[in-house]
Image (tube, rainbow, N blue to C red; front, top):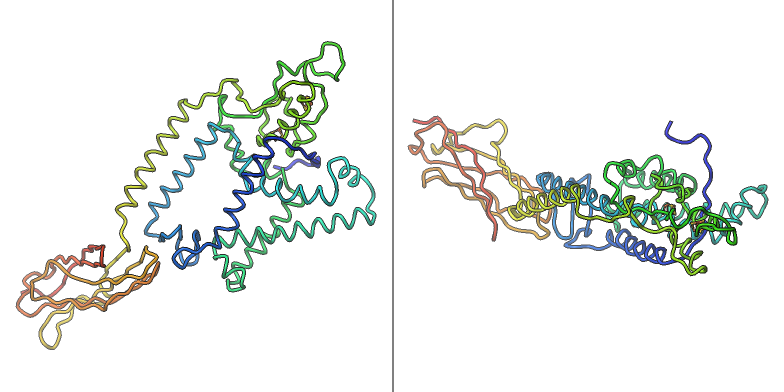
Length: 434
Ligand code: SF4
Ligand code: SF4
C-alpha cells in the first residue's frame, strides 16, 4: 500500500515574495520552451521531435537514427550525471522550480482555484459546507477549466512526438490522439485531485533524494536556535518564532518545516517568503531560509567531483563520436538468394543491396565506386539522391570480365561518396575462380 488511507486535503495559502517572483520567471521560461519548441521548424522538421514510428530523433537541424544509439546513450548518461550533480549541490531545487508538476500547479491550477473559490480560508469553509448552488457552479467551472488545461498540456506533450502542426490540424494517427486522450485524463486527475501525492508517493526522482543528497546539499531549513522556544508575540522570553503558522499554511506539501528536514519538502521556498514577510514586521530576517543540514554549504566534495568527472568523460566521448559521424549511415549486403551469375558475354556478375540512411536536413547525391578487383571490373548503380533523414536501398551490380578471376572469393571495398563525405563498406566478390 503506497497511499495513505485517509488523505488530508492541502489548502495552500497564497504567498508573495522574492522566491515566488523567481518561480514565476523560471516557470514562464520553461513554459515558453515547452509550448513553443514543437512549433519551430528547422529544415522541414520540428526543432525537436522524437518520432517513435519513424525511428528518428530530430534535434535542431540534426537527425539521429537507430545507428546513433551510442550518441543517444551518451546524451542520456550526461543528462543523468548532470541531474546527480545538480541534486547533490542544489537538493530538490528542480522539484521546487522546474518540475512540470510544480510549474503547472503553481502557475495554472492554484491561480484558477484562488480566482474561482477564494484563498485558503474560503476554500476550506466552502468545502466543509453543503453542496449548494454556489459551491456546485464554482467546482464545475473549475473542473472544466482544469480539463481544458489538461487537454492543452496533453496536446503539447504529444506534439513533441508527432509534431505540433500535424497534431493540431488533425493529421496525426489514432495512436497519437489516443495518447492525447490518455494524458488529458491523467493530467485532469492530477490537477483536480492527486497533486502533492505525486511528489510524496509516485515520483521516482524524489525517491532518489536520500542517495543523491548529503548534509551539504541545499535544503530549506528552520533556524531552531533563533526560533525556539516558540511562543505568541508578547509571551515572556519567547524565541523569535511567534507560532503564526504562516509557514505551514502556505506549504503545498502540507508539512511544518519547523519539525526539521522532511522528504516531502520540495524546496519551493513558499515558507521562506511567508516567514520573511512575518519577520520583516519585527525587523528580523526570516527564520526559514535556504541552508544545508550541516550549516556549511560545500560544493566541492567527493560525490560532486565524481559526478563532474563522469560528465566530463561522457562529454569528451560524445564530442569524439559526433565529430566522427558521417552524413549518412550505409550498409551493403549480398542480394538475397544470389552468390554470382555468369552473364551471356562470360562476365561474372555479383549483385548487392546498398542501404543508406541520411543524417542530414538537406538532400544529397551519392555515388558508388569499388576497390580490390581487377581494373577491368565495372560497377553499376543508380544515381542515389538521398532525401533529408530518409532511408533508401538501391541495387549495386559489379561485373568482372572472363579470365580475371583466380580466387573464388576476393575482398571487395565499396566506396559510397557524396560531395563532401565518403563511406567505406567491406564485402566480397564471388566467382568459380580458375
Ligand atoms: S512563519 Fe515564521 S514566525 Fe510564523 S510560525 Fe513559521 S517560522 Fe514561526
Ligand atoms: S516546507 Fe517550505 S519549501 Fe518545503 S515544500 Fe513546504 S513550503 Fe515548500
